Image 1 (cartoon, helix red, strand yellow):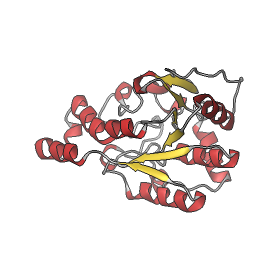
Image 2: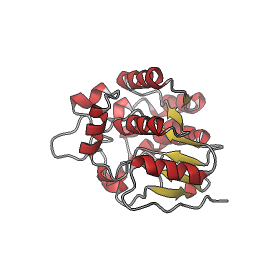
Image 3: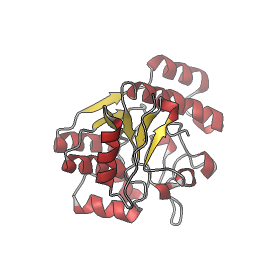
Length: 231
């Protein structure tokens, strides 16, 4: 049975969105953590508010070294327990043997296939048993995220709640929070990256480009999702 989506007060702060969402879920809730600035901020907000929020991460096998450094820093700072999920090695072996190491650049279908193996299937295992999950998505990140809600029902994952506490934060608000709280920050941000995923699929952005322009830069903007956030 799907969990009812709770009402939020106007201009609810991220801590309030998290608290209301976790209470409404009435069961285990975890953050899908990619160790972005957004996810680091959410961990800190939840920690300060004393919220019962789990953390899981998807190790695609293609992450940057700098991403693992942030994970290690969070474990040390918060004594954080991270539940790591990995793609099935048989599927990765088959993909690379038959399609090569960079098949995802060949077409949108091939990229979706790679993301499906490395991200979507592990996510399905990570969400089993959860009543809700939390993401760091923000509305201004890209054209694909403009109509999101702070708390919504995830019909593609059994009707559990999907909580997006930073949905209406600007990049400036996020940067200010990270700096004011002296939080761990991926070193790639200082090199022009604004959204960080797998190493071969992510690059720095140019002035004036949106935050996700460096993700799958060879594709059209409306296609720049990996499948974790299908609607």
